[in-house]
Length: 101
Image (cartoon, rainbow, N blue to C red; front, side, top):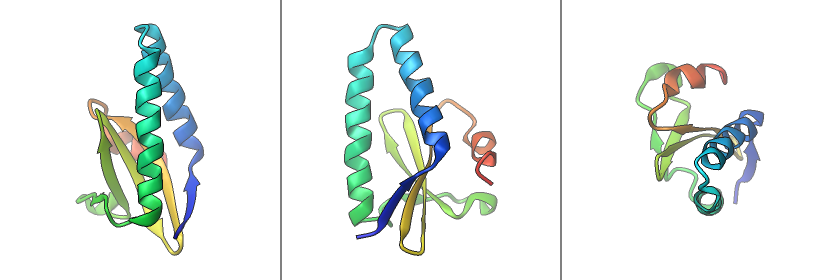
């Protein structure tokens, strides 16, 4: 099993998601989404190649999985899987991934 890390930007991403759901009074939806994200994290530990590679050369070190309307971007390097970002599908993921480069 691989080591597992979460980048500091993921905390910010989750906080933004929380604020969105809190604003529309749908905190149970946030809890469900967070539980699904945790399940996917566990799967990635066992199957780190299960995500789809990003096909853009500049971002080709990333893989992604989809949970509801959110991309989970991660890297799989050496013995470590690192969740890099959680980004809503309506947002410009290229611009947000730039913060990781």
